[in-house]
Amino acid sequence: MGTLVIVTIVLALIFDFINGFHDAANSIATIVSTRVLKPQWAVAWAAFFNFIAFALFDLHVANTIGKGVINPSIIDPLIIFSALMGAILWNIITWYYGLPSSSSHALIGGLAGAAVAKVGVSGVNAAGFGKIGSSIVLSPTFGMLLGFVFMGLISRLLFRAAPRKVDGWFRKLQLLSASLYSIGHGGNDAQKTMGIIAVLLFSVGKLGKEFHVPLWIVLSCHAAMGLGTLFGGWRIVETMGMKITKLRPVGGFCAETAGAITLFLATGLGIPVSTTHTITGSIIGVGAVNKISAVRWGIAERIIWAWVLTIPASAFISAVTWWVGTHLQR
Image (cartoon, rainbow, N blue to C red; front, side):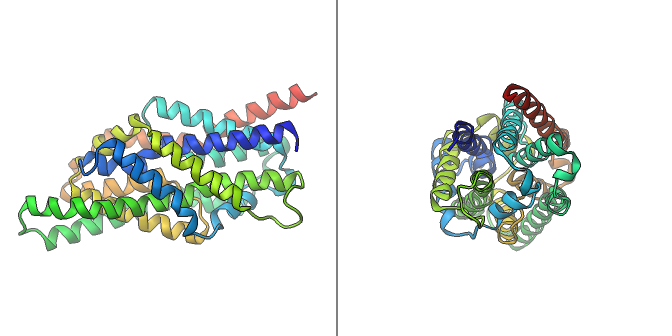
């Protein structure tokens, strides 16, 4: 196995770690902001459920990433290395500024940028890219609608209950909803790195004639993501849990449940959605139940701009990396 292949596998696991670190906010922001768990316990809770997700989902998302984003025939170690560099650098930039951008779309943008740099737009799988592109709109919209509906129904059912009792009930229920969301997060996001490593090994003839994802890749990717979550990206936790809208335990439960349902459906269908987009949409939906002004739309606008820029920015960084790498190899 060549040096570049080994370095790229290590880089993929670093990306997975950063993904967990960057996206820890997705799993714990609501449960921390509602003070159901202290931050150190929240990240441990989320990391555990990130890891055990490997036992609950088929590898449909890994197959989509491995075969459905760019033309498999053009894949080589430099393309995968460049894609990962684009995704990692963009994640670091958005983490620094506390913006919850999508690690998933950063990776997809990185793949597209390297493919286009190598062979032009023909290197991108139009159908697969379109499927993923539609999820940019659909996953937060679906999460927002579910969050709005759940919060509205529960508010109607419990409007006569004492607020202290409602908080007590939903503090317990949030442990369940947070664990489900963390399972959905691990199940969808870890598979993206699995697909990257597997298609890299397949491209250099290390997986035989049929594309598949070996168990060691599955376990190492879930472990790397869980460790990243354990370290937590606190800048983004603050943005997600405290700046978009004010949450109480009932709102946290509704947002997490809406997000978990969205992620379970997407993972079952093999769609690599953004867990960041999903939980942000769910939080906005919950906040909008009381009144539209409860949502801090200025913060939401900054987040949306980060979403819009993620794919082109990571694609640009990836393309530049590929160009530099190609010239260094000559």
